[in-house]
Structures are given as C-alpha cells and as structure tokens.
Image 1 (cartoon, rainbow, N blue to C red):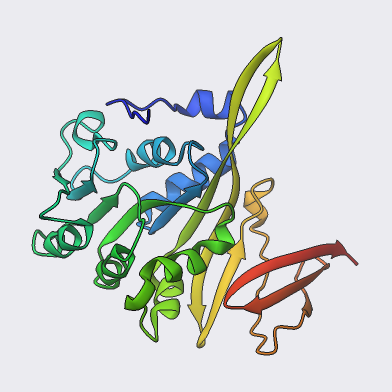
Image 2 (image 1 turned 90 degrees about the horizontal axis):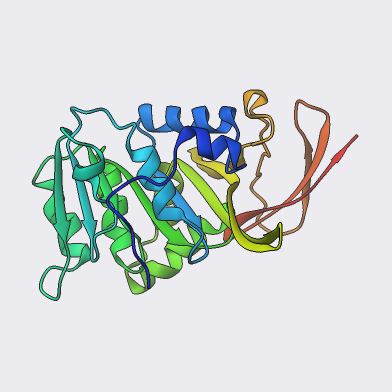
Length: 260
C-alpha cells in the first residue's frame, strides 16, 4: 500500500552518506529550485520520486504561494513547510486534475505542485508553465530523455501541433530516481539514487535535451542533440574532445560517447 508520511524522510546528510547523490548534485538541484526551474522527477513505481520532490520543495522561497494538487495526501506541504504560503487542493469525481489546474491560475500561485501527471492534464500543466507559474511534478518513465514522448502520449487527442515545442520550452529539468534491490550483510535492501539529470531547451527553433554529468556537475558536460530529419546517426564533437553519436526522431536519445 502506497503511503507518504507528513514528514521528509530524506536529509542532506543521509542523501550523501547513502549514495543517493553527492554534495555537488545536491547543490545543483537546490539551485534549480532557487532559480525557479520547472522540474519533473521521474522513475518507476516505488523509486521514491515523491519523497525526492518533497525534499527539494523545501527550498522554495517562503513568500512564494504554492498550490498542491493531488488525489491522495502525499505532499503534506503545509506540515513540512510550516509558515509557508500554501493552498492544498484535492481532486475528486467532480473536480479532476485538469479542472483543478485551470482553477489554480485564478488563485495567482508562484508554484504548482502536481503529485503525479498521468493523463491529459499534462496539457493544462504546460499551459500553466507558459504563463510563468513554476512547478514540480512526477511521472513514470525509466529515462529522462523519454519525458517529452511520455508527455505527448499522455496528452492523447489533446496533443496540439506545437505541444512538443512547448515541452522543451517550459519543462526545464528532468531527474531520474532509480531503485535497486541489493543484499548487504545478509539483508535485502532497497537502494535509491539519482541516476540521471537533464535539461530541456528550445533554441533557434530546435528542441534540445542536455544530459548533466552527475559525476562532474561543475564541468557541466553537455551531450549536444542535433536536428536530424532522416533519423540517421549524427556525429559531433564537444569541447572536451569526446565524440558523440545521437539519434533524433520524435524525442531525443543519446546513443554513445567515446574519447577521441
């Protein structure tokens, strides 16, 4: 049974000591929140997406009005962020996610926290982002580079001609949380850690996903994704002397990297 307690299980100390992430990655993501980036935490069921999102939500400025939208109590934003400006909305059979998101705009929030984006409400979430409202949400996928395709598939018939461009324009950061079952000292344990981080952007009419090297965040290594209409591999060199091959179709996928 899924249960999220009105507390934050993660701490900076335990995240670093357990190998969930290192100190540089931790600071990088805290800065993403402070700089008001729209973030999608992704992963498979049980990976710990919501707990990770709850942790980083604590770095939202106290004066920023936050609206949480969920069907089951998971964020507990008011309880874990005592004194911060927050409105908590719960969806039901009358007011679904799409209606709740549209209602939020009339309440003039700075942030919208959607517990999980599952279906066509992704269209209205992107509309909110386009107005300047910032947001954090979670979704199911096993690779940050699949986030755009996952969102397009969830939109279904509501997918507009420019929706893919909107995803790259208004979703800033993707974070993949991974869970692995390991055996230590004869005990079976669930090890959770940040596996991938990427940024999305739309520049000069082209959509781009940039992988962040989480083992060397300061270097800000970028895997450049180029436009390639015939879906054949494109090779390029980045400024660190590494040869990169990528494929570009509907969505973007990193293929390989080798030192030259």
